[in-house]
Image (tube, rainbow, N blue to C red; front, side):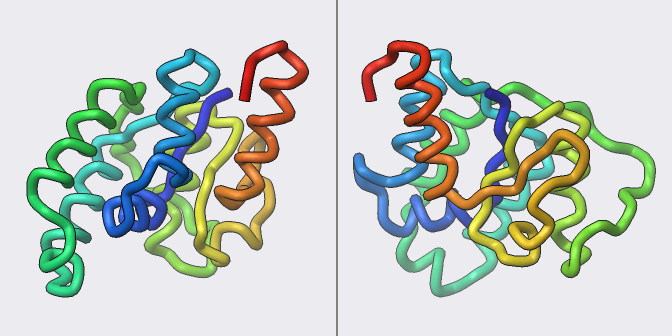
Length: 150
């Protein structure tokens, strides 16, 4: 399964990192070869910019924690080529359009987000928009069908 994760889920993890978090669950699936994590450079840049520009976040999230997550994402994520042309508007919030474009270009099966502006779309092309809870269920069902332990 190929997935693209919205920045909001990485920020949530950085605010409250624990082994039961969605990002930890997802990274374990990546390490096990069950999921391919798509990682466009612009997403990494947005994550870094989001944490560093918001005083509320910068006071809670340590530089070391952010650097470690960025390192893991670069190491285990599959790079998605930079989109040079204009990205067509498809969402209610134009700031989310790039996520859909990179999910489509990267041939993602799922775009995982907590953002209702994305989730309301449900599907664009072959990309399904799902919440982290929905994806946990999808991945658990996949593991069960394929004989993997949860």
